[in-house]
Image 1 (tube, helix red, strand yellow):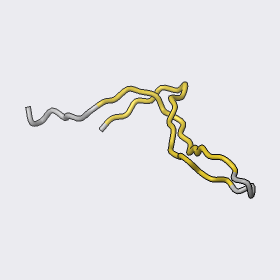
Image 2 (spheres, rainbow, N blue to C red; image 1 turned 90 degrees about the horizontal axis):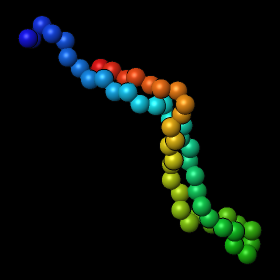
Image 3 (cartoon, rainbow, N blue to C red; image 1 turned 120 degrees about the horizontal axis):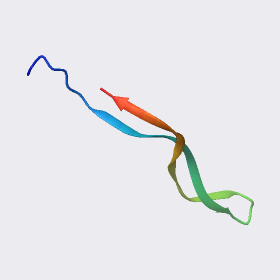
Length: 51
């Protein structure tokens, strides 16, 4: 069956991502970051990926 093409197919949802940070202001009104990262949320539109 070497003449039969093969690959992968994935069904999911495209997602939106954004960077976030958590922190607080010190006494001199300077922002001090205590944690940060990237969040990814699903979108309403479906996505099909393939090879």
